[in-house]
Amino acid sequence: MGTKIFSFILLFVLSLGAVAQERVVSLSPSITEIVFALEKGDTLVGTSSYSLYPKEALKLPVIGGYTQPNIEKILALSPTLVIGQTFNFRTLQKLKKFHIKTLMVRLQSIRDIQNSIQKISSALNAQESKEQQLLHNITTAIDSIKKTKTPHSVMIVYGLRDDLRSRTYIAGNNIFFDEIIKLSGNTNAYTSDNTQQPVLSYENIIALNPDQVIILHSKKSHPNTDIKKALQSWYALPINASKNKKISIVDEEYIHIPSHRIALTIQRLSQEMSDD
Image (cartoon, rainbow, N blue to C red; front, side, top):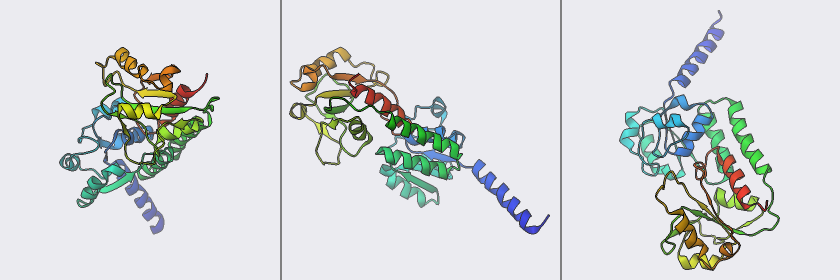
């Protein structure tokens, strides 16, 4: 066997060994989902709290909350790669001091999610066919959206509460929820250019006067919420949505997660905003 051929085989074998020994820590549920979807779940040795999908993720060691992961717990897992989001910047910088390879992804817009799938796929040497399938599903979901026949303003609310006098969190601009509203041919009731998380008072909601309100609620996470009472509070508001009977609850466990399952979120929310 020639020297060049032997060297090539040796490098190939060594590269296979490196991939097989990859030890990945995910700092968010979204990243965990993407890694599993790329069929690289066997490389994960740790993830953040609230990583509930797929069910295999529940077996992984938890390294803390996804906004404040525990450095010591991460280091104890001897990772070869730690993947985090933009809000994990400081944590990733600290890990670099320990000579740990890191990857930072942005998961705010639909395009961000698509780009992140590609970056994670490349970092983990995932099969290109798996990556392309996930991207195709998102593109198909976008292309399948039926434009609303009667465009209207939509407010997407995070969480169902029966006391609207306290703070109400909603979807602002420059986020995938805002994009889905616009892709459906509608407008976001919140039109401010403020990039911070919008928090509304009772008076703010009335002032925005949305034509439709979609409340993202999880019975599993908040089983004690009095849904009937909460909806009565919303329908008591002097806004178009209550007059038009266009206040609804969407309870899907994937709805908040900016992963490859954004395809399902696009389908579900566009359906909620349709005229059919």
